Image (cartoon, rainbow, N blue to C red):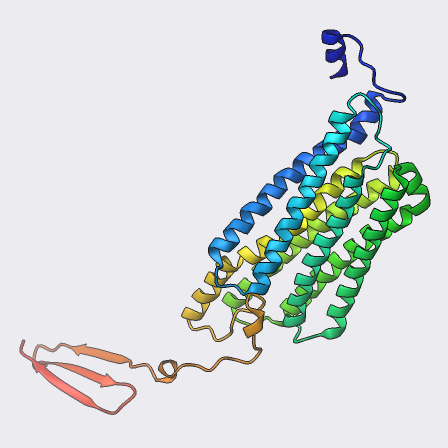
Length: 343
């Protein structure tokens, strides 16, 4: 790219220490991460719109949570775009890849807050599904909150130091601990949901199929966020001299927000499967989807299901010497009726 610019407009001053080899893994990674982050932010907005269209009957608590996540996501996207402007436009040709812009530091805190909100949502699902297991859910919330505290401390130190090099050598362990705790919470949530969903199996194939679908959603959401977080952590530890970790970090909050919205919007599909199962005679309610109403006991069977079915047995006998006789017998009673039919 720089060769084409040099040919067209002459040599361009790139600032001290600026080279293509340092530009690609630094500002190039920031640019790619920003584009992917903006795309995923658009997906979040679309899912929020679908949520309000599909679930207008949801309570204020859920709607407030969704709105808060959406606004935080938009603010995060704005901070990312502002950082791109400073890195790539205002300082074009200058090597400022070691400078920490305050908007970059703010994205770290915003990512932690969004992550904490999503973790609390899934912790609440585990709390309800586990019949109020305070110990496990409290542990999840405490670890998730510790991750937020570490991220806020990292944000403050980033703004104060203004240099990636100084931050890595002085307070890099704080950022490392925060990402590590995020991955740990993801694993705890995925393991907890799978464990309690397995305990909720009913023995009916249709209902167990629905539970398997929920487990697939859980694994996919947790796996994607965990992998991205772990890869960002690895890049941060092994390559602290470039900004590849930052490009991945931009994406983390979007994946968490999309995981939350995908879980909420998937209720229509899973509710349809549950309703179809109940229409065929199932006796167990759908767990997790509506945790407030979930009860482990078998629901009472309606009166019309308790009535014995009427079975009619028809026997037709033909004989050349006598009339045919149609024998109709009600299996649930003792009535017997014979009707001669003229040949």
